[in-house]
Structure formats: structure tokens, C-alpha cells
Image (tube, rainbow, N blue to C red; front, side, top):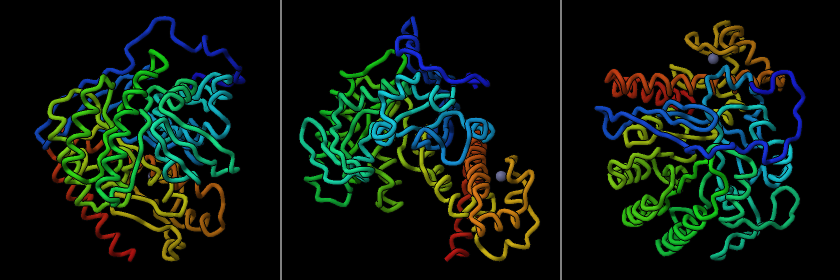
Length: 397
Ligand SMILES: [Zn+2]
């Protein structure tokens, strides 16, 4: 950590901008023998990321219950911060005055920020969408706010993330086609405005493909967004309630439509073990999701044998670790019995240890997935993960 033991000191924005403009991201990859899967490396202003890669979500400038040292120990290379939340509290201007998001949260690795669009359309009350932007009331205190492509880019420049996302309009893919098409067309207009408003030379900007699960709309969206000079292409509007089959079909279609486009591809909001394999085979390089950290706080941990629910009474007498093969602090020092006790007693350490384990296990899964692409064992590894999680799904129901 760059912070060391020093007290954070506010710095002017000018001081954190690089003196020489640098390329915002570089991405190199090898194609593999597995479908459209790519094995690559993305280099950002705060370091490299091996791809395919999963980004733990640090909604409020913290990955819930983990310190930056914990995050490093999990093997995290890049994390995600939320524009909507950080701008409502403590505000982007305050984080900028305190030296930017990296310094504020003492994480010196790469950070991607979303544009706030997803939360505006999923969390905020009383939304009013027009072509200029979105007016909404805060879910925290009811105050009125306005988010436009220009403001979303300004906020992300103030936060100083390595990758900023274009502002998009998310809609339920189950809505009538005309509504999905309308939101997609607006997303395309906002994509151009987001690019025109990009704020800093050391920040990459990714565009977002929408279009629901309608094949023609998705193809049109890929054509429009990939024709713009974005540094990467994100696939939005999936993992929002559509079927697994629809997600797989849509990803296959996007992979075909992108062809040999050399930019990194990021699937937003997907983070379940089986979905990684579905998406990587269809050319996805980056993922983010609250799932591994959110389920950890309910006592659900992921292992090579599938899911375990630590609240289950059967674990109260189980002296074995969560997963004997896992290198995390929870597995190295504690038993399932101890964790089961912590969850029953609602002790804070339980949330931290379960989160530490799930993030470590997920990132190790991604490392093994990359290795399997390199040595040709991808299909065998997927079969194991699918079987383990299908088994525990059945056991849990
Ligand atoms: Zn572990």
C-alpha cells in the first residue's frame, strides 16, 4: 500500500494528475482453443490485471468487511467502485479533495467505476428519464439529484478510477420491444456524449452494449458501440432476471458480432462460478458482481465441493476448514465449527472470514480457469464446477 503508516493528507487534484498523458489501458491477449475465450493482460495506470478476471465490488469505497490488506491477501487485482453511492455519500467532490478514490480507501491497485446508471434504475425512487439525463431522489434521504452522461463522467474523473463507464439506460429485458429499443437508442446517444466528456488522460472509458435479449437489438447495439473509440466494451443488461439460456445465447451473439475486436470485454453484474465458464467461452475478459461477498454475509461459502451454508447446525461440530485446499486466513486457521458459531452469535469476525474466503476462492477459481485455458483442460474443469454446484443446489433445496 502506498499509504504505509502515514496519515492521509488532502492533495489538490492537479497533484494527482500525471504530468505526461499516458495511454489509459493496454490490452494484449492470446486466442485459445476454447470457443471465443481469450487469455490476456490489461495494463492500467495502477498496474496490470490478468484476464479473464473477477473484480470484487467495493460499493462504498470498501469491499464490505475487508481491509485493503485483506483484499491484497485474496489476490484481488482490480476492484469496482459505485458512482451512484459514492456521489451521494461522501460525494465525488469530497473524495477528490481528499486525493481521489485510491488514496481515500488506501487501495493502490486498479479501480473500475460504474457510471451510476444501474443503481439509478434499480435503487433510486421517483426517476424521470429524458434525453438529457435522469432526475431521481436519493434512496438515503429523498434529496433530488440529476445524472447526465456529462455529470457521470465528471464524477468518475473526480474519483480518479482507472476505468470509467459510459452512462447508459438499463431496462428490464422483459419489457415490450419498443421500450427496450428506445432505451438502447438513448444509451447510444449517451455513449457518444460520455466519450466527448471524458475527463482525464489516465482514465480509460468503456462503452456499454444494451438491447435486452432481442437478437437484432443486441447486434445493432454491438455495431453502434463498437464503432466508437472506447477503450473497452461492456455487456450490460444481463443477469437482471433473464434465463440462463437467454444469457448464454445473447453472449454468443455478442461474441460473433464483436468478431476479432481487440478491446477488453466486460460482462457487468455476473459472478457465479458456473456463469464464469459460460461467459469466458463466449469471449468475456472481465466480471464484477456483489454475489460472492453478499452471500458470504449470510453464511454461504463456495468451495470445490459446491456451496456450504455455515448456518446449518451440522457444521457446529465440524472441525475441518471450509475448504482444505484454500489458502485464505479462514481456512488456514479456523474450523467450520468456529465459523458456524460466529454466524449464530452474529459476531463481526464471521462476516469478515466468510467474505475473505469467498473472494479468495473466487479469484483462485479464475486463476485456475486461466490455467485451464492455457493447458486445454477448460471443459474438464467446467464439468467439475457445474457438477459441484448442481449437487449443492439440490442439497440446499
Ligand atoms: Zn478459504
